[in-house]
Length: 258
Image (cartoon, rainbow, N blue to C red; front, side, top):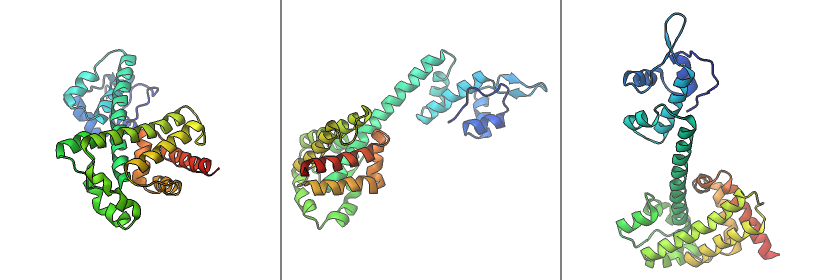
């Protein structure tokens, strides 16, 4: 979804399609339904897209990315102050980021548990974990960790109630957020704030799931980078966070040994 606002006026439908990353058929469809008309004219009388048309197209494609319907895009992409539109787009993106961040935190919590025998009703499971279903990973978890002491110890989670899971989820999110906030503040991964976040992360796993020594925590840190699913969880919160969490865990383990 790329429209360059500084392009010269009078662009053909083919040129606009290439700039915006859409098909000519899509632009013709938008024209037919009244969503976007090319308002310019070439010297030969052919219809072309003006800068204002490109700005409207940018809005239309933005709301398409957010999965708004055609009628919604028609209303939202109407004429108006550009700054107002940009502020609205920023707000909608922030809401989407917040929602995805909460989902990714829930996914990380469930995978780190290494135990999928969670006694929750379907309604409670949906409330706690959202659309993420821990049972989808049960076979892989059993194959990878089924013979380990940590996996056997994590059977304690089978008796957790909904309230337990809500509390555990909040504690895990808080530990991750502490490291994300330290990174956002420009602090090094071996800063006190980042290492304290890593220590809270280790203790949360130790208290809720299985004994998590510093050595085991180092193994988890390596997995956060090696397994793209874990990396994606942290990257969805903030780009570069997977590496930062890894480094903070290493620094915290070194601090403990020192």
